[in-house]
Amino acid sequence: MKNSVVTFQQMKEKGEKISMLTAYDYSTAKLEDEAGVNSILVGDSLGNVILGYEDTISVTMEDMIHHGAAVARGAKNALVILDMPFMSYQTSVYDAVVNAGRLMKEGRAGAVKLEGGLEVCPQIQAIVDAGIPVCAHLGLTPQSIHAFGGFKVQGKSEDAARKILEDAKAVEKAGAFAVVLEGIPKKLADLITEKLHIPTIGIGAGNGCDGQVLVYQDLLGMFSDFTPKFVKRYAEVGEVMKNAFRQYMEEIQSGAFPAREHEYSMDDDIIEKLY
Image (cartoon, rainbow, N blue to C red; front, side, top):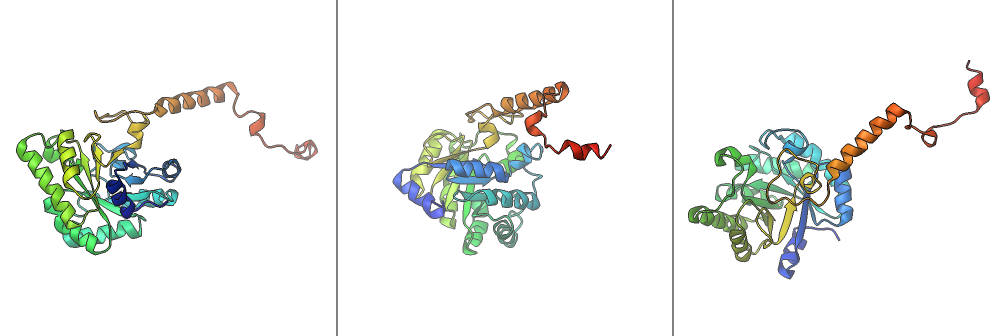
């Protein structure tokens, strides 16, 4: 069944957990889709895990469109959500709507995601009014990493927790269909999930959220530059890949690859005429 913003809401109401993973290319999206993941997030985390940047700030609209369209071609049933990159929506409501429209039209998104609370509610409302579903993102928002002074858990003090709670209520009122809660205490995430009618998707926010999202390279052990506390590795695919690469190089050196079964044949009398 095709996942949509409607099925997200139905899953929350039924108490069914929503599964979300990142993807940035066709083949990975196809595998995740075939596994039955409810949603695929083309996150601006591609700056870190695909493009090798130190943060997400350098990611462009063209990057998101390029990778988003590839993912959309591989996902038949999952809801594909594209991140709005840094400064694609903060500058004005007009810019936000235009860029969200590009992600839908050129990036083939089913929805867009942007970071921030009360301060971006005018953008959320305008994008939703344009017929584009919006997923909000609160807590540890990577595009604000320099303002936070690093990757630090958010919402631990009373004032900070109250601000995130109020932001969550505000983005819901503005029309967001879901909200990602990243890097906040479990008890705060539980409270927000209880207070909101829309689904919450946690990443480093405990198991009380309506769903969970992880960067797939973290889940598979393919990215080791930095591993957050909230990551669980379900496989060590990175080691499997390195071992396969080493075996490939060894067989080239030894002559074991390519073997006879990897070769094409032709008649001997034809090749003799060429000498």
